[in-house]
Image (cartoon, rainbow, N blue to C red):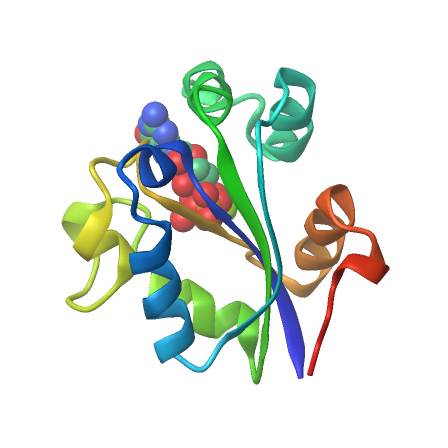
Length: 139
Ligand code: GTP
Ligand code: MG
């Protein structure tokens, strides 16, 4: 059993899509074992996306992530990291496969509704940035 970290981004919370996205997550067999709605600070957003700090879109990305509340989650399941990436679909919704969250809901490559960890190491780090172990309730 594996855990991954998920964010329902500002475009999703502002369009009341958190339930619709959670339905796709759960239909894929992933269990939401921790979840909270937060307003990210600039410092949190910069830390979270530090790997992208040299990219031209970094400023825009950070501004977007603090523009409204987000929902942070821990998802658990068999191959949760890869499975959630599959359910999310391609970063650019124009390239996302039918049935994926981004195909159904995302607006653009920036406002693409969800984040999911891309490796086991990053999943661990990202979960630890937002949740303490006693907030994650498996079972
Ligand atoms: P995440 O799960 O959010 O990390 O998405 P990803 O792994 O599919 O994409 P990547 O890690 O390459 O990029 C991180 C995030 O940066 C994306 O989800 C987008 O929100 C944003 N991003 C990537 N490319 C662009 C771009 O060209 N313009 C803008 N505005 N944002 C971008
Ligand atoms: Mg990524």
